[in-house]
Length: 79
Image (cartoon, rainbow, N blue to C red; front, side, top):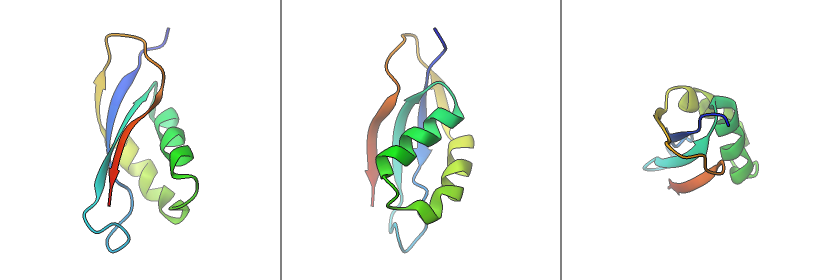
């Protein structure tokens, strides 16, 4: 089993599209999977900002998980 991480990713849409920002909490094996999970949940709505998303994922706070859980977007708080 691969190590999973909890990613805390700052919202990737700049002002004024996102007035106060937000936070994505994602469980993923690596940066690529985290990026794909957020992109899939966003469903192309903010596609023009996905270049920002890649940077936000790479610079996200990550925490190793002790258990093997399913990769997913746990919570998304965005404005």
